[in-house]
Image 1 (cartoon, rainbow, N blue to C red):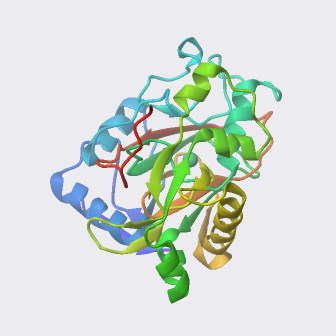
Image 2 (tube, rainbow, N blue to C red):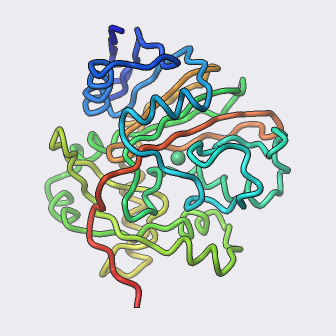
Length: 295
Ligand SMILES: [Fe+2]
């Protein structure tokens, strides 16, 4: 395969051609895609009619797959897909749209807030790979923001102030921001906050980026309201139009992004329609900072 990548946004995002992801790919192609990810942070492929097995096989070229469970409130017997396939559809086990007041749907609405996948895990995710199996005509765009460009655009004073800050991330905070607070004791335990640096350095390129997410609830050592107001300012800064790519889905589009360098969100759509989106996630390899041991 000969991969070619064309940049389709002023600061990031590459569109890939010459790649059939339903087939096994060779080391040179994997290396070309990885280099593309380091550079563009987001890669867009079209016309990839993947099965779950093919999507998982492709994803394993880049590391270990995360499994579902830690990041949602769906019970094991309610799962529509196997554990390595993160279900970001609006569907139940019978492939029917969830009722508008379904608790799982309420929880999943958190994906409409800007976030970085699995930033609530002590070892957060590397890549996310999202396959549009059934897309909707109107709405449901995925927007991705370049956290390197956002970092670069900060003034020197702000860069110095945030350099060593550490934030606490949890699904309790992102869901709480939308007023979803009815969590069981077990769920609260599962969503215990973890610590992440606010500024990350990419292990290959050395570029710094803002590690922001709606999962952030406070900054270590700061009063919570002051931390939240500041994080809100930084998210406003980082999601200005010049840093944002808008992906309008076509069926069988396949989009992969680097969670260490970007944030994303999904936009509103008519949730009575079927939207079948399936994600695989490459686990990260190290925490961004030390965690506090529970007493
Ligand atoms: Fe996400």
